[in-house]
Image 1 (cartoon, rainbow over the protein chains, first blue to last red):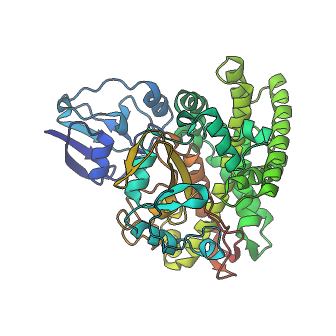
Image 2: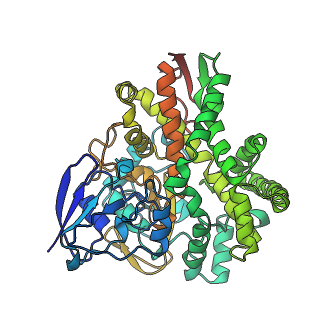
Image 3: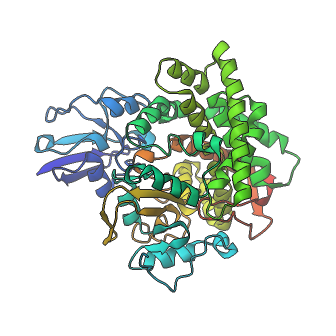
Length: 106
Length: 413
């Protein structure tokens, strides 16, 4: 069981139980998270599933590369902890993951 | 001979009734148990959101079917579509970023996609606002306008032209060429459309060649100059550069003009929604999304199956052509509550007006920013906007959706 938490820009918190094999974007969409519209469906082509990963000491994610890194460079308000949630595959190691949704996407 | 589902269904996308209101037909198609086979273009029409999304996101479903055809079969198909004997169109329009797949597609997309990412597009806000202000100043004495021809049609081409590096004064000509090339993709096009499309592609090509010569000697801060450097570095060929430029200019014109017209029409058909947006301008993002969902400007794309597959519970052979009716999927009640209601607050609004998967619309952020600036400005400037013609005529055909003209009366604040 992998528990992930989305914090919307208005402070609203949504906790979800993610299944291994899903992408974090799919978990967000299925949980009705506002601000993750993920319009291209996970092809790394739209940048509308951008999120900030919170450093809470529980989860460490690898640095984005390839298409994801290219897109993150040019999303609105990119930060060092920016990720595209469509490129994050859920694994048991991600239990406790917390992400913020950017204000620009609400 | 494929089985035709729902024989009783009348599907005539070239009819005036369909142009006036395609949504009852889309609803009837969605309610069929199986996809509808449209014999005229040898295509299985998908109208349910679940089916459309699954095919759009399926990496084995491609825009082209070259992988499953022999060269002779491909040429026969080209003849059947009447896409043969038009050398410039074949060279620069029938092959481009949109029509390519795999490594070629990914390479071409990567070369230009940075220019269209959200952060880069946001830099265009000032230029869009300035041009909208200029147009409105020129129309200041007009109490009644054709919103499409007098206003909307000038804006997207001007902005995309500037990004690419086209002089402002050439934008009207580019719009004509773009429309003549794009028109050929509609179902029901004839030999005359073919001749016009080929001539427009040739003229467009010669124009771009001249412009590239200028950029070669005097590079500017524009996409053409940057693509020239990429060509010099061996990252793209000259034909790819021309085809990509044409695609960006064509895609940047018509569909945004169409959705500006239909978006305004929607606001005027649902005056409570216009008042809601006027009273709370922060709703502009959801309002623009709803404009794309409610009247999707490019309601029809296709994919070919590259292997035997099951779609909508039905088995299909490799080589089958599927029609993705985005305009129908975007009214699917299985995805949207009250789908035939225009609601500027709708959220989430997971429509497929920009397509899906690797061919997701490159210019989506630019189109939305154009819409954001335009409708925000109009709401600030005009207290009252009324339809002059209660039933504006829409373009006919399956591939485009938008009013031919939209006469409105407006009163400034």
